[in-house]
Every structure is written in structure tokens, then in C-alpha cells.
Image (cartoon, rainbow, N blue to C red; front, side, top):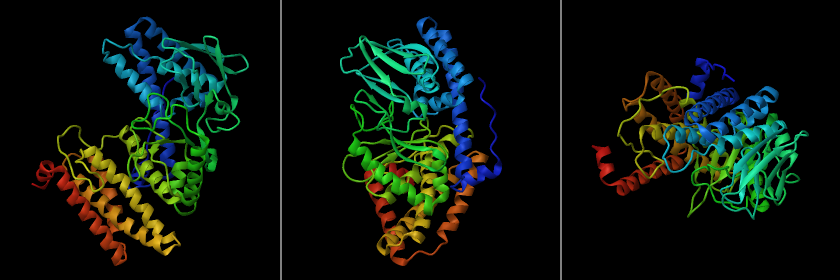
Length: 456
């Protein structure tokens, strides 16, 4: 298996830099992320050969199984490799193999689980053993089986029979994986979920058939994801689905390019813990297609969060292709949305995400029928266009951008200059400027010496 070469047209690169890109950008970036993970899977296999012994045998078996699935059902192999948890699993395993700590063996079972998941999706007969670290066994992109009587040291035997049915056995206990999750993708949770098998929850199906899913990530988990040892409850899933369906209707009607990006491929939402007040969200460079967020409270709030995290997803994948800034550097910068000083990559990411947020609110202030909510949209637009413009200007003056990164940031700034020239009602503008001033003052008070160094 050799990943194909990928080329990004200059016009598409520039479109992404302006804060958009559409479905074409997401499809290309998804293909490049798949190729990157495929290359990592092969690198894991090679590194395991140097380790030798059972580690090498297990990795070789997983690679052979991936190769067989790719030949017979390439979509099944792609679905397993592009699941968000595959990124941390593969790159984490590669790091373990290249830099062993001498205490714990490399978790090669992560690789085996990915290969078995691909085979289960394809209905390809195979057998494999996986160690249990608790009462749950995850098959990435499919779901997880529960073995309440499992003991430390137990091993699960996964058997895909000649009819394509997947069975998991731990001692004398057996769980059969329902056909629906892996015959049509991890998109259903009702008839296919049993008390012993937990599949992702389908929140809604987007144009073109792409599912928007809700789940806790398989180990290794997304940082700070909310613990759900028994899986997500039906009531909680329905609450997420209600907001997700309304948010997607809003995006489809009023923000068609954002909706097209969301619909360009499967996306997974992961619940975050939510201490105190306010909404939180996050993305990880190695979990492309995943957005972690607090439980939503409104359709508009969820829609703007999806917009924000899509920006992070795009830029993270783009940074796997292109060097936009020079590595290193101890500098820390003020970010108008964070309580802490940020390194240049964080400032760059945040500026790009808030460019998307500003574009969202610019459109929302035109389409929101409720006068009070429209006033909020005006204020949010003014606040985040100012913040993104300030951060982009600082990024451009950092001296750390590559020529291509400078080109990208210049396109960001051109878009933001246009947004900053648009009229905003005086009360909304005053509210935005007051919020920006209050944030900077609180930041300076919180960060003390660091704030004084940045002001020098």
C-alpha cells in the first residue's frame, strides 16, 4: 500500500487562508490525513521489526490484515484509519517503539484493534487476540464491548467468521458485534446497541450521507473528555441530537459553506467535562474529524462552536502539509480569547479559528430575525473581528512566519480588513470594545510579570 501524492491548487490554499475552502478543502485534507496515518502504520510495522519478538509478530499481523482489507474493501480500511482515535493510537505507538521507556511494552494492541476493526467492517474472516485493561474492549470506529467479570490479565479473542459476523470472547463470555454499526458505518445506536455493546450515537445525517456522531473516544482518549464508563445514556444522546439537528439546519440555511465542510466527511463530537460556567471546546492535531465540546445549550451556540472547531481541524491538517512558521522560539503572546500567554502556533491557530467565528457572526447578524439576538450577533461580530485582526497582525510581525505562512496570514488579514470596514451599530461596537478592554486588563492582572514583558 503506497499513499498517493497529493497536490493542493494555489487557489484552494488561498481560499482556505481567507477562512473558507468549502467541501473541496475538507475532502482533500481528509485524503491527506488518511495517507499520513497509512504511512505511520507502515512506520509502526518497520519499527516493530527492529524491536522483534511478539511485538514484531503482532505488528506484522496487523499490517498484513490492513493490506488484505485494503485489497478487498478499501472503504473499510479507510474508515478505520480515519477514525479520530487512530491518529493518537498510531503516532503514540510509534513514539513508544522509537523511544521505549524500558518498563511497559509498546501498546501494539492499539494497532491490532484498528486492523481488526477494518476487517470487521469488511466482513473479512480473521482471528486476533487483544489484552484487556478493564471491563471494556474497544474496536475503534465501531464501538466497545462490555465484559463486567473480566479480570486483569484476561485476553479477548476476536473472531470474524466466514459469514462476516464478529464475535468477541473473554473466557466463557461472548459478545456479538451487531451488523449495523460496521455494515453502514458507526451511525446507529438503537437496534444495533445491546446492553453489552455500545456503538456511537447518530446525531444526524448530513447531505451526502455523512454522519454526525456523538461518542467518547476509544483509548487513547481525547484530553479532558468527560468520563462515561458505562457509555452515553439515551437521554443525554437525545439532548445532544436535538441541538445538533437544529444547529445543522441553521448552518445549512444560512452558512452553506460551513455546512458543506461539515458534510464533506464523518465528524465525531466528544463530550467535555464542564466545570463551572461557560462553554468549552477543543480540537487535537492528531484527531482530525473530532471536535470536543461542552454539552450544547442552543442551536446557535453549537453552530458557532462547530464553525470554530472546523477551522482548527482545517489548519491542523494544513500544518501537516506545509510549514507556515519557523519552529522553536520562547516568545509568548497575548491572545484576546485566552487567559494565558500563548506560543506562536497557538496564537496562529486561535486567530484562524476566530476569523471563522467572525465570519459566522457577520452572516448571523443579517439572518437572525429576533432583534435582541441580532444585537448580540452585531456585538459578537465586532468583538471577534477585532480580536482576530489583532492576533493576525501580531503573527505577521513576529518574524517567525515562513514565506508561505506570511502569504497565508496576509490573506487572513485581507479578509479581516474587509470585515473591520463593515458598519456596526454603535451600542454593539461599544460593547465589543469594552469586552476587549476588560479581557486585556484581566489578562495583565492574572499574568503579572509575563504581561509586563510582553508590553515592553
